[in-house]
Length: 259
Image (tube, rainbow, N blue to C red):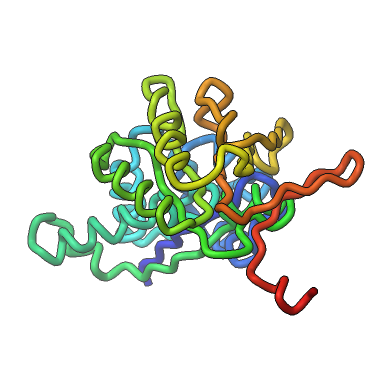
């Protein structure tokens, strides 16, 4: 049976990789990923055939994984975080969709058994580091306009702002994109106070992790890089301090029962 595992391996800490993900990797002969993700996994990847394609080669990775699986090699396509959130899973199914539409010439792909294995996303890892910032309704928005027009992204930020969602921004900045985050901040300031708490989580759960708590009014792209996940609280999110400990949480409305 042709088998492709589409695997999310979490934010970076080996202890946060799900047992099901580890079992899929162990069962595979071939691993397809950006090289850093394989490095983070360590020993579990030893003895496997590595297919390391650089950033920007996402379509190539998805095609290669499908081709390897279709050829009879049990294959794992790997992304950090949750592979179904701004990651590789969507490309696999987009290629299969194109094949079903007759726009690809790989009918063998349709015989591949596919299992998607979720992982802990950056927004979950970040929220856990500071308490419960995602404790009520939330959404995610990618600020990368490489594939999505900025006009569409801007509309979504306005909608999230008017809906008072906690918002986690993925791909907030890059070497070539340094203005979108500040534009997103200015949009949200139309809907919530400048004192709204903001989490900056860089290299979450990895050795060089850093956590910064700031406010929406103080949020600035110069303090963020491509390895940073930005989560902005809603109008009710709270920042509490107990000595040297700081926590962020978003109440769900239990105050009526607690008081």
